[in-house]
Image (cartoon, rainbow over all chains, first blue to last red; front, top):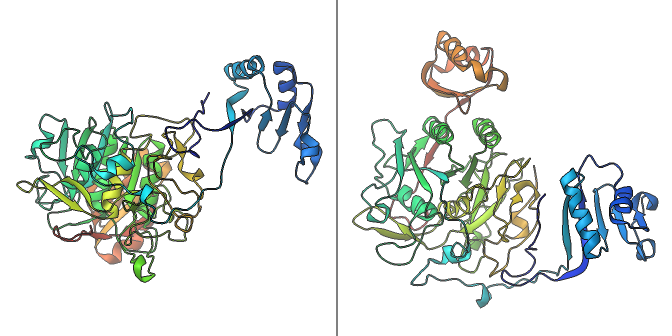
Length: 413
Length: 76
């Protein structure tokens, strides 16, 4: 049974507003839910949407009913006393009921353009990105989770990672896994960096995760499919729950190999996330498009947010093809993280920086597996959400994660 | 030319045999990747139809290259 406790419609830290009624979700196989409501919970008056035909259920139809059952959805709204609620909840043990949740009161989300309340900034303790993804209050440290970052490798001499379990491998001919660019070390820092760095605020989301650093881009910053796909194969063989790829090419088509790769990875329990791309200039009205491989149907595309949780000006918008949507967005503007020694730290922007914020914050990154879910993403409430079910939403300041604009989100899956 | 060969779901368990067939059609195999079911390698471009015709091959794709901005770039 899936417990549903938080709404996501209220700022984090406040109790959700509820009506006192409950939403009961029945198992797909449950064919006579109204009868179950009568027999298990003793409800005498159950309105059934099948009686309404094609018209909408009106208040007159459901007034006085203990429960209203929506047959197309397999969902009922019920007025249940605590005893009836317990009876319904116990039906979950028999597999007939999936969940019993309080009915929540929802409100129109108001826009707060550039509102000061939405603004994050680095503190002495935490980067603004860690604050925005609520990494400080998350119960998940990454402990026991393996995270792969496929990028320009890793600077193994960086003191902030001393004592960490790190496995490195190079898929670039003629180069070791040592990072000669800085980009890979920066992404690994955001994904898995420490909570007590040698200097400045903490910058790593999954600070106890086991790191797999695959070098698929050379010191010059370039790479190709052969090394990237080999890196994914390696990450899968090593049981990495999240495979983070802050790389992409501005091509407006799906590159076929990544469709098969993404699907096979998900089927085996690995989430591949990739940077949506920096090809936009929203200041000039150019919204760009999600490039490859992020535009693949089974790879999650990550956009970049600024400190106001607005889309960063360079962050690419949905490409209107199957899989081309922007799936999620995370902190990707002026992000401080680890860099090559002796510089040690660098503050840079990009969808590359947003990607590791999101991967390690996803439920898979937290070690949560959902039965039957092909992909899971952060949804702002800390509760798992199926990627295909995000739809249009904008997360709000203070609820702990990223925000999105409706026009950046389209559902193609 | 560098190719990425996607092995179809039915032949993933026989990926080594598919790789052998691809070799006999002129592919110089670089990697056989069992977890993802892909084979990478290089061959003259005119070999492509032969590679695509191998049983168990779902697609043969040319390579995409990726390039990061230089390290001193503000946006990466």
